[in-house]
Image (cartoon, one colour):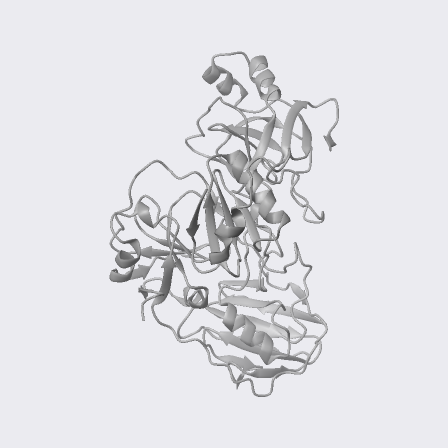
Length: 283
Length: 200
C-alpha cells in the first residue's frame, strides 16, 4: 500500500520516536517534536507508538492512498477534509482508495501529525525512520509526488480513545549542570523573565528573546554531552531550549533542563508567542 | 570525579582528562548504566538513567586505569589539502615536516560531535586556528586540523578546519553494526596513501 503526496505546506517530515543510543557517535536523537500528539495519532489508527507518522508544519498537506486506510490527524488543530468534506480532527478517519485527505492551516500551534494504519514504512536508519534535519540521517523531507510506503496494519483503530491532551502552561525546569555560569540563581532568573519565541527556532532548538541572562564570560567550556530539553545559554545570554535534532555535544553552558513532559509545547509555540518557566520542584 | 544533575534522568560526570572520560564512558557502556553514554572533552554524560541518585555509588567502583587501549585504525592520506602550506607557515616548517609530524602522532578519538561519525582526535601538542570563514563545502574524507584537534570529515558538509589532505576510508556507514569507524576510544594513525588501509 502506498500514499501519494499531492500538496505540501511549509514542511512535511517522517517522524517516529527517534534514534536513541547513538549520541556518542554524534547522532541526534530526532523524532516527533510533539511526541504525545504523534503517540495519540498512532493510537487512534491502531498502531503501536513506535510507528512513523507525518509531521506537518502549518498544514497544507494533501495526500491520497491506493487502498482504503484509517488515518488520524492530531497536534496543532486544523481543518481536516476528505474530498472537500469536513472530517473530525483528533479521531480515526477512513480514507477510501483514490480519495484525498487535506489539512488546513492550524489556527494555533505549528505542527500537526498524520498517522496511517500500519505506519509510514520508509527504510529505517539506525533503528528509526525519523528525518534528522541536523545530521541528515533518515529519509529526505517529503517531496511533492513522493510515494510513501505504508506498513501492514497491526491493530484495529481505536473507536473511542479518551486521551487527555496535555494542557499548556509554564515550562517546568530542573537544575542544569552549569547553573553556576550565571551570576545569581539561574532557575530563579529564568522563571522571573518573560521570553518570546524567536523566528530562528526550529527542530534543533527553541530560541528565546528577552532580557539576557548574566552569563559569565569565562573560558569556553570544553565540549560536553547535551540532553533533550537542555536550556543552553550562549555568550549573548539568550537561552535556547534544545529540541529533538539538537547536536549531541556542545560547548555552551546548560543552566537548566525542561521537563520532558512539557517539551511538546516547544513544538507548537509560534514565533512571537510568550514562554514562561517555573521550577519543577515548586508546588 | 564529580557528578552534576542534568534534569531528572541524566547525570554529567566531570573527570580531569579526556583519557579518563573515554575510560569511564567505556566502563559505563559495558555496564549499560544509561541509554546514552556520551563522552565529552573532560566529562561523561549518562542520559536515560532510571535512578540517577544511585549513580555516584555505582561510579565509585570505576578505576581510571581499568580499560586498556582501544582498537587501532590506520588511515591512508593523500596530503594535497588546501591548507597544508598555511599550516607549514604557521608551524614555521616545511610541508614535508607537517606531514611527518601528522604521521608521528598516535591520535585517540576523544568524542564525537559536529556531524554523525565526526570524531575529535586528540594527541597533538601543536595548534592551528580555524578558518575565519568556514568553507561551505568540505568533501567527505577530508583530513583536517583545528586547535589541537585532528578530524576526518565523515560526510560532505560545511567546515572551518584546516585541510591537510584526504582519505578514501569510509568513516561513516549506517548499514554497519558499528556505523562510525572512529568511535570514542579508537586509536588512529595516518600514513601515506600507498600502503592500504587496515582496521584491527
